Image (cartoon, rainbow, N blue to C red):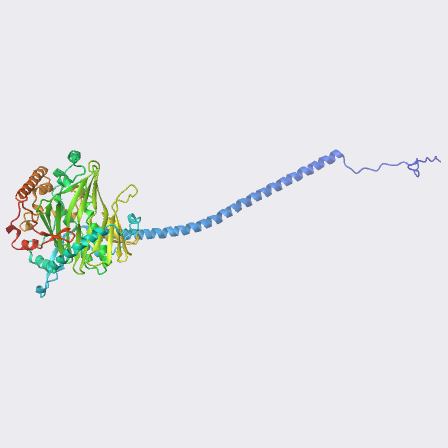
Length: 599
């Protein structure tokens, strides 16, 4: 038996016992580490793929989201764009319709403003002693003006949209007009009595051929015999340098600076749009009548727009002018009633109105410009309503006298009153051009009632037209007619002005020898004969100086043949017709009446 060895830590174990080492199931650490790395690499690869897929999916979702947003935005934009396009289409349609309407109006205005030799039938109201006969006459119509269509035409003219709607001062011309009322009332009463049968007289005289030599004219000329001369070689400074601040009416000018019309004919030119007075005579509303009278007052300036390059002939003392317009229904005559100061008087009548004025001119040369200051009044009587309108003229200024292109300007205030009624008053302002106001030729005005309340507003330009109301719904009251072809070559004359100096063979034996149509210097200038015109101008002026010296030496005073002077309580004078012109023309005729030799 083997001895037993005892051990303190293992007392129950026998030393002889052999222990076998159990087989180990653990892998080798190196091999285990390799497997772990492989697993980790596989996991990273898989995680990488998953991340890449998720990232790609996220990017795809983001892109799709942006596309969706863009699509929604485009739909909203397209919806707004469609609305905008619909609005634009609607606006374009309205603009096209308005353009078509304006083209139609312009075409109508153009057709109305063209002179054509038409013959219209006119039924003339017979006088009481001719009441048993129905009188029918064919009159030539040289210029057709459709007033009713013009007055009812609604205009949306952009150039007048910026007209200031202000109440014009009522104190500007109060004193002037009140001074005129004292004698205008008396004068208009006399004229009213003298012209109670104007319509009947004119009707009878036209029918009997007393005004036209027994036949109506078939037409009037449409062009002057010769164009205006070249004035570029005339040195005005040598003529005017010693006359700065003086009255240029006493300075003799070269005939090339004149136009083949004189001041007496210019007064008649203011009647070009007399149809406004005819319309006023048929308008019952007193405020609308005042609007038409205001339009007539403005229309008298429109023909001057292209006339700044020349001046009219100064009438000699005793010179006259007559104009009978069957197409317009009026007869007109004028006379130079004074030479120092120069005063021109005129009288015009028809069955619808009576017009008269006397104007004296003061002009001053300021170096670069010349001011023309008119003194006098214009008067219109409407027998149907018993109205008598009176107003003043504004200042005229011609710029660039010595150099550059000359241009004309009218500025000042006009007050139109009805001396027979205080129902309304009209105030017009011709705006003066300055550095802060670029609206040249602008006219503004108002028609007010007795209490000063504005009833109608007026605006426009004196060379383009006058409108009543507030833009763009304002109505056109007056618009000038079209100018003739090549008007710039013929002194800038209108169609009406071209006809004023025409000497008809039928009228030649009926006119007084003092009529402006017989003036030789003016006639030679019209025909383009400058040398003869200059010689005759000098001769006519010398004859006038000789007559004046003779009258002064013999203490004689010139007495106008067809006008008389009226003095009021304020010692202011006015010249009115003495009602002898047409009577002398009829019987015994001017060929049998003594007349001064003027040329």
